[in-house]
Image (cartoon, rainbow, N blue to C red; front, side, top):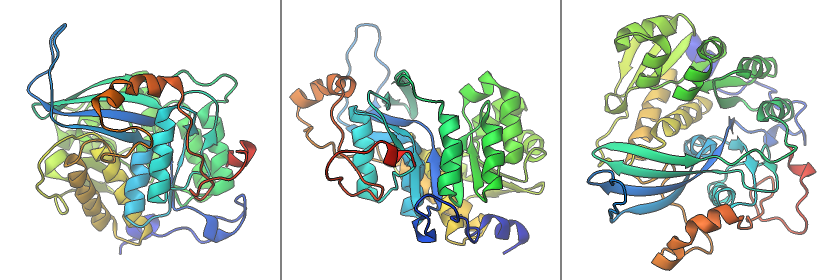
Length: 363
């Protein structure tokens, strides 16, 4: 294990000191910050429908995505993973919560609120591509900005790692993470580049691992080919990992680049939604377990390959009280927007007894 691997490996000793509820064995290895999504995923269709046209597919799944995807992959790799999101009383929050309970994902860093909080995404797969229609609810009234809450989460939980998207104001969060001994896995999106490119670059310089995909990196750098993109971005950050689909991932450490194809395996591609997030979660999970960075990238490749072979970011999930019958599915959107009551969960994912204490779930 070289010096860089040692820097990125196992948890910092005493990282949980001062965390709420105190004991080090209550600490999590990774907290994924970000929005939750309910996914309605349609399998391959021959083409997108025209105006007024209806087309059919034999494949359909209900899934969930966003921060829960990263935590799911890290948990599958053996890490103690949690999410820091708003959990409302809508169906999307309920589905994500039930999934987290089933997978052993920690919810203590999430906050319970009234109203709809989960985004809703409809995914159409066609000709090896995807199209999306998404809705993100307005933020519940009186709720502080998520960045403010995430600073408190870092102070209270002090995870070994956090996962977050780059954007305006995030650089201060990354500095705070380093102050409390938390390493940072940083992702980005086209939207964050368009909103504030310089803020993204600033965040990249503070990340322990920067995790764009090839298209995002090209947009961020403005370079014409991947080699030029890697050269430009490697000047911003010490460790850069760029996912490149079936080719694997490019790993750049201290200016030295290599293409890592280990871990990639052939699968029937059903849906590429969540492949990059699964890669990121598995990579961090492997680092937590003591893997070298090279082996962690290979683990990420394997998780990304697995992800494209299923429908939905975490695969199909069972929705309590909702059957797969046509009548039930026809009322799904109304249920999503109408605020179906969520299953309650304790800090360790077990069902809660008695009233739900919002203050206890600020952590």
